[in-house]
Image (cartoon, rainbow, N blue to C red):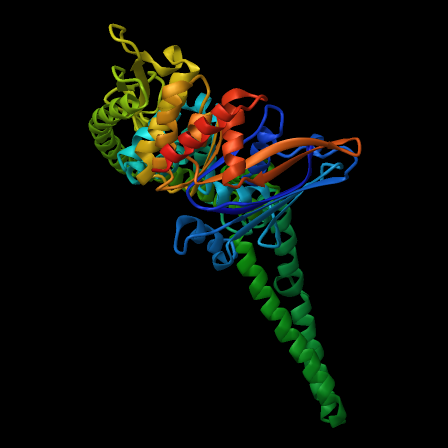
Length: 568
């Protein structure tokens, strides 16, 4: 409930402070006194966009402040607590509008963002004026009203949540399938490269070993001659080195009989002889393995050419070729995982589509039942507002799905969106004999005002709003209709705090509280004031509303009678 409202340096308002109470509060005043400015101020405190143009001439800032009482454990209280605000203190909203457009918002003394303000005030209060009348003409708003009346908002929210889960999955699936399609040629290339490398059966260091074998094969005869001649020189030919070393050893051994100091040198020569013999054995083994085979040379050169091609294609070395193979296998595994992921997403989408379709179908069936009940109640409410023979109907329809629409967002060839499969249209026939037509096509200003008020009355027990501000509720009505509108507002005030700006005395007399908004010129400046009126002043104000500037005793008496009758 709105308890206090302060406005400073805002438009033509210098400094206003208003205390509000429960029940029906009436705001009246002459045209141009500033009633609409107060509505603008409340709108700003509820989160509408601020502009430096709203600052009073001569001031650098405008300040708006509102204090709301918050019901413990209410939705507003929970939102405040979740954002770090103590709801026990109530809700104090302050907005400072600056000429430099650097506006500030404070909630319970702490700076806040417009997003947090909007979140908290979304269900705090509403202003039912020309804007709301225009909103009512839109199908999506009519569907919200229908769901609210039928208590269908929890099921609608479930559909909203599932829809918002499905849409990203659809996009993810689309992206993966696109990626999978683009990869088909790439996969073929990767598989070819993988097979090419696997077919080569390479081993680490193989290219170096084969290169050495190629050199040996290419120079086999030269190697054979060199090794054979070496063996002969060392061991095989007459006067070979081993033979001569043997003779030398024998000579030294004989000399050792004379001088034993020569034994060490003789042994060295003997050791040398043994080493040469070992070398000869090794050379003979090598000689046996020397190949002079043109066919083997061709095979080796072919293998070496294969390895060189792989190295040129995949990194310059056999290690790089092996690493490239690992990379290919990893990438192919990832591509295989895409197929698995696609299958998983498709399964998840099918599962969620069943839930979405079932929930949408159930909601649609409930809406059809609710539409009948709301239509009947609206006709009764409109009858109490001097529209006794008005026909009212809530038409429920679906939108046929486009062939290109994702099947997970389709039910029985109809589109499923975040509100289900239905759209609602309020149909009305104000006059006997007329056919039902959409509210947006036929309703006059006065009829639309009464439709809005009827809906407010019907939804009074279901709306969580604490405060409703009515501006232009009297648009297009007068006389006897105005009186029943006043009674309806008074009745509505049993469930909500109602603040009503009106030009009609027939409505004003039903208020529990009455404020007079006036415009004055002081020291060359225009400013607006708002003051509560006592019983005597209220009679005078109602009389002014009845007759204009000239107030007679008869008018005063009439005003007094109207007030007395309204509060019997």
